[in-house]
Length: 478
Image (tube, rainbow, N blue to C red; front, side, top):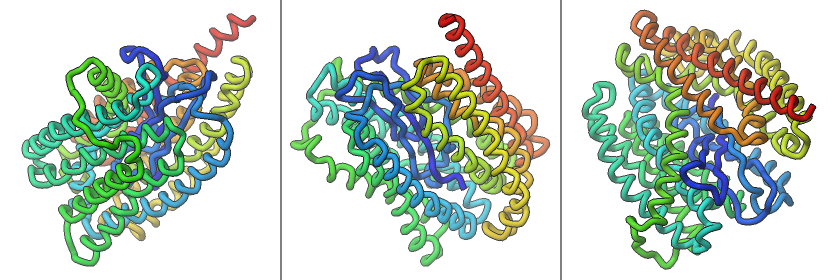
């Protein structure tokens, strides 16, 4: 299931906020750091997909400075993979519980509520990266962190109010559920901010703990409130809010040396405004990436209601899990692609992208064959139609799988994250346009076809960017 996320993100430390970019996102991004002079790609892996309904792959990697030291990089990578291995079955269990106990209508409401909060958290979730990026100019880390927390609280409160208002105007959600879900926004942004700072400091173990903790707490909360006490959507959202709140408290307690003694920072001075501007610029990229994958959900809700969203979301999260194969390959070649020359880097990335495509096909075939039998068995008979949507999603998902590998060359090796943003925008436009045409007639199947079209279009554009950049560089070297 779609329950582990590669979210590489970052910014160039010391760069002008107006030109910095970032991504991969969920939120948990990377920043850069404090020492080192060689370009280094850092990768953030978000481990709570079931709780934020975001896709496991987004098309944007950004080159940053080397994080602390290359020593121990292998051990940190293994440790991160271990945490990801723990998070994946837990996140799958969350999806199964939501499907079995909330049923399609409740599952759809949960997805819509969490997705709405995720949009706002993506916009604000890069504050930690912004802090890391500004530290070269302003060594006062405590002052930077407190400013980021101040922005998170003020903007988060405004965002919570906007979420509740949006829910009141949306038939598929409602004011009560939206307001309840909105309570997670401030704590979510707080622990994401801490996560960004931790990555900049090279404290990977604590970062991994914070990525896993929301899933664990949400799962325990749902077992108590939804399974044992027979609560509904509100109970499930309460568990999710509690997961984010407890994670924020743990993050603050574990990093108290970074922000104690507490203080009320100025929110209108140039430094605070610079942090906010950089974070929102990077967050805007995150939001575009998110919309490029999830636009069809809102359109489907308009025409088919929450039940349609609930059924379709199972297909969506199930089929996107096969991107983890290509994501692992992208991680494995990032360092070699930076170490070799441009000619060898292009060849390495191109070969690996083709390998990722073939491996994704190999995984997709049994997934497609098993889906009609496994989906009703695991999630219940109410979700039988998800197998059809899954089959229609597969062509686009397969074609899109190599994108996470190709952007190692585009954004990391060549430092062109704007091309990745163009891919996200193209995918969003294609998906939304196709969904407006197909969803009214075909429902969830139309949403799947629209999404597949968006994936395919983004994949073709990424390959074109890669070929063009590689040819241009080879011509220069000739």
